[in-house]
Length: 380
Ligand SMILES: *[C@@H]1O[C@H](CO)[C@@H](O)[C@H](O)[C@H]1NC(C)=O
Ligand SMILES: *[C@@H]1O[C@H](CO)[C@@H](O)[C@H](O)[C@H]1NC(C)=O
Image (cartoon, rainbow, N blue to C red):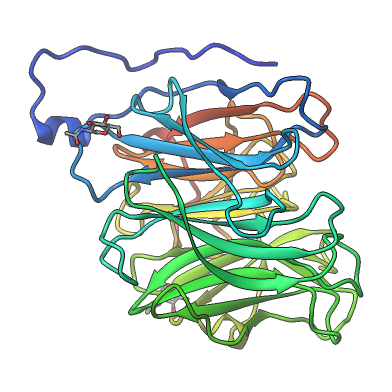
């Protein structure tokens, strides 16, 4: 069920100053449609949405990009849609196509804006990592592309990780779900890895100083039980300098695919800190395909926001991830497999989804909630 956008805080100003623009709150959105796939698309048609807010170009307009798994006629590609009105309307501006494998770009796109010059690219260059997979699903290849014109054109940069058949079956050897983050003078790519024969699946990262060559994979989460499947890393920086990662944990004692998280001073050393389940104050344990982000709105600690596949709500925490302080807060955005959360200027949390794994009429939609108005568990 798609609802039209409602304008809760819309107003017009004749000559806004840049300061005013920077602090105005975007409209709150209810399931704005970004893309309805045509019937030529293979079911589930769309999944796994990702967004990006361009932050380094000083543009007075907030420019958002979105992409997703796009089950188009072969070969698939990652569509790039743009919004210049904080998510109310969207236009396709480009497609990231496979330039090297002849397979298409099929699963798990991720967009990242370089906050500073890196690897021969200027600040503001946009990276797109994703899984290139042939139509028969016989191989997985996490590849990296870049755009230096705000997403209009894309160029292949490097192969990051190669794996086997694209089936989530223990004993098969695929790689999945890249997540990029610049840390000190290295680019980190986190991903899920089934290649180690000791683990059905584990979470790893590789680093690069030039975006061309990648160091060996390092474990982030690897459980002793072979059948355990930690998956789908996302990471956010806390205001005290530590990093928080979320992941789904098939094998968790609390619930199948329970959302877990780890906090580490060093985002390349999550393997050395314990994981804990995310349990809301109402007792809910969200499950499957989590995504975490952090907002500076919400007092000294800001607010952590986690989405998961299991419901339309988000899980908010204003206590740096304290285990007794996750509040479940409803949103207008339907539950989706690997929904994305992103903070817009003014403290609006944009929640973007592209449907569920079992969906036969998935489409890509986005909604938002105002983090200035939520009531959260206090930090005692
Ligand atoms: C802001 O971004 C939009 C979308 O990329 C672009 O059309 C426009 O020219 C940009 N404006 C400035 C001042 O850079
Ligand atoms: C930041 O806060 C978290 C949560 O309380 C804590 O685990 C971590 O040690 C803190 N980091 C620093 C650098 O103080």
